[in-house]
Length: 324
Image 1 (cartoon, helix red, strand yellow):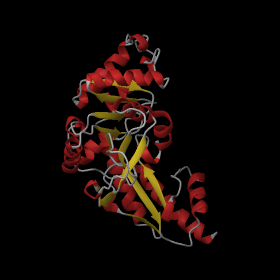
Image 2 (cartoon, helix red, strand yellow):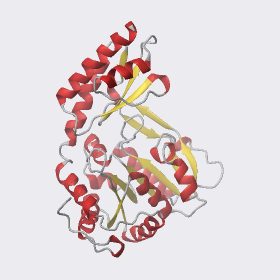
Image 3 (cartoon, helix red, strand yellow):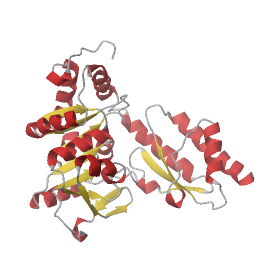
Image 4 (cartoon, one colour):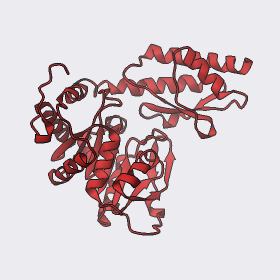
C-alpha cells in the first residue's frame, strides 16, 4: 500500500485502480469493472444503474439487498421490493419463483445472492442457470450480490466465470474472505459500468488517490483466493465440534462454506451469560437471533488450533452458565 502508484480516479488516471478493475473484469469474464468503497455501495450502484427510481426489484426475502440494505435501496435508489420465498434443503437454497404472485408493478430486476448469507448456503449452478433463463424470458436483467463470491465458487466447485455468467452484473466483495481492508468491485458490460461510474459519483463514491486501497485489494486477489479452502475446512471442524457439545446443535448438512449457524437447544442456558463467558476468554460470537441461533464465520485470522480452543470454551461456557 505504501508503494502504490496513485493518481486521480476522477480522471481514471490512478494506475493501481485501473489494474484492479481490469483484473476483476477478467476474472469474472465481463467487459469492465468499477472499484467502490463497500459491498453496500456496489449493490446500490448496481440497482441504480439497472433501473430507474420507482421500479420494483425482485429479491429473496432473506437476501442482504432486502434484509440489511433495504432502507438504502428504498430511500436512495427509490425502488420497491417484490419478495420471493426460498426453500433450503441441506446446503442448497432454491428461490420458489414458480410460486411467485406479483401484486403491483412487474419487477424490472432480479437480485440474487451466492453464497446466501442466511443461512450460509449455496444456490446450485443448475438453479442459477434456471433463474437466469426465467428472468431473461421476462426481460429482467440479473444482479448477483457476490459478497462471498469466491466462497460460493469453491463450495460449488466452479470457475468464477461460470458463476458470473448467470448474471448481468456482479458485486465482488474484497473485504470479507479476501481480507482486504475495504472495497468491492462491480462488474458488468462496458455500457453498464459507464452508467455505474456516474451513479457512484452521485453517491459520493469517487476515489482520489484510491490506489493505496486498490493495492491491498490486488494483494488480496493474489494471496487469499487459494487459501479460502482452509476457511471452509475450519468451519466444518467448528461445526462438528459445537454439535458435539451438549446443549448446542449445528445442522452439519448446511455448513458448505465458511458460515455456520449454531443453536442453543438447552432451554435453561442463559444466552447472555454464555456469550459473556466466551468474550472474557477471547471468543466473540454473533448476536443471538430468533430460535436461539447465532452465526459463526471463519476467516484468515483463524487457525485450526483456534477452532479447537473455541469448541473447548463453548463446552466450558455451557457448564458455567448452567451452574451460575
